[in-house]
Length: 625
Image 1 (cartoon, one colour):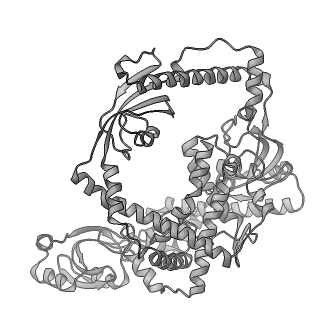
Image 2 (image 1 turned 45 degrees about the horizontal axis):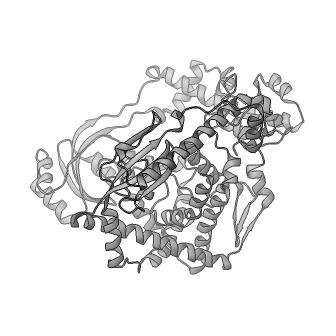
Image 3 (image 1 turned 135 degrees about the vertical axis):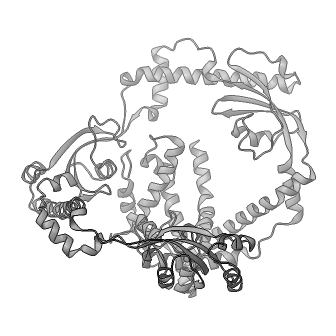
């Protein structure tokens, strides 16, 4: 399996690069590779461009997280590095950087207005009435750690890279003869006779003696490694710590209310029924034919939808629509009015008056808001005092006592932290720091996304190590038995394979409860939903001729498969296959061109790696980064 993962990683870079290059907007989870925080260090240089440890770490963490979803929570960063995922992350970022540098050299310039126009047309960022939802846009940017200027720059780079992709893909076509042959093959169906031997149900072998167990242990020591563990202590500053001494009087609340009265005002809101179309002539036709009561039906007759927009405020609208919407009388048809979204025709159905509440009505709300504001300020003040004491060399226990803060100790935790006896505060940030620093080192004061600060001091590191035989003897015995049963299942599969090759009918194959026989329904090679045969057996099945037999190792056991029948696809099925196949072949071709293109560009943009920095990124431990 490890070799399969390594093999898959070889083709990952070009195909992933293709996907990243052709995306119109990267805000849905894809950040720019040059965005790496304030760190001044670098771990990889590409020409004059520098990739920081933060950028590479983020990409590598994403790779590790994806693999954990496939292989389980025990898949560590160190294992990922051994499998080549760190190199894969570097190759991916280097490829993108090289293309960025080349677009700069070629002088590709994308106007800001083009980015804004495409952004405003993005469906995910439009309100029900078709207007641009700037608040949602800002929330998306914040979730990616970006501001608007960074976003625009990122999209300019993506758009510039797309010019190269289009140039490489413009002439890609699939020969008709090849496409027809492939479509004919993929439309073909096969009926399989299968015999599954489940090693878990195979009769148990004779119990192994001590020598056999010791031999198995010696040959498989890597399987009996204990994960690295660490003992550490955590100093935390929480909102609760900061709010202990916060007091807000009614007088203070009244004063704040008077000074910030505008913040507490409830704005006027309006309910609209609106039609937005891209064609001015159609908008005028709808406006001329409709009245406030018939707008919905006139729009429908024109193939458009009148959309209700409830409780809209001035801040929800583009500036050009503000006066028109909030200056219109109830029940009056307005429009068409042009905006970046198109031409608007609407009627104001309801006006919800704004309100300036009196202090007495929202006194408690004002007090709570002031408490939060003061607690936030106080938390920063405490953090500054902690920093000062750390700079003065004060031990954590003394700092905790002086500032009235909690100091928690944890003994011999693994990277998951699941073996902790008590809850770990700010778990994600704390564990990452605990496995990042060396024994005797402290992290800086870390700000948590949950609100608060944490400082981690590593007291002890117990490296990953092979456990003693006596400590894992029972596990070794279980593994030996499972291994013996797997070998027995493989031997049985070979015997059954021989019988099927001799032409014996499936019904004549003998076996105990470990053997299950089945004849499949007609299968196609890329049917991911079928459950007649394990997915890993589909490809071998379609390599066989009628009557031929193969043995395939699957997650469920040893599978013996024989092709009972081959059913050609119909003309309709073959034609339906051609379009998606052509798209896939063309995408693969462009990915190959990109691979060759970036390989050639590497001669112009040499790559330099900081080995020490890369080693520090993952380290030699068996935990997460």
